[in-house]
Image (cartoon, one colour):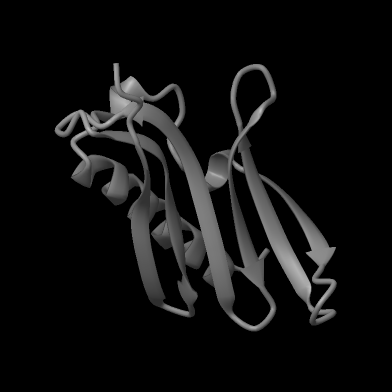
Length: 119
């Protein structure tokens, strides 16, 4: 894995963590955070383009997947990380997770919100 890929991966993880913080969720409310060096990586071939894709996955203490990131050969990437908590500032929403995507140094991100169940 080259240094440029690691640097990009660390930037994507930092963006995911900022999305979590923007929601008002304290880091200690989650058992894990998206940290590049804590992901398990493997290479695979994209079935559509045939290019190499670097796939990283985060797992909880029981081995269940709680997030992933994929870096494609064309420079694009996608990452998602599970939060699975009620929105701390708005009871109408439940935070499923956060996502980040982009190409090269351009990173976009957003929270994945679900409407909270009524009582």
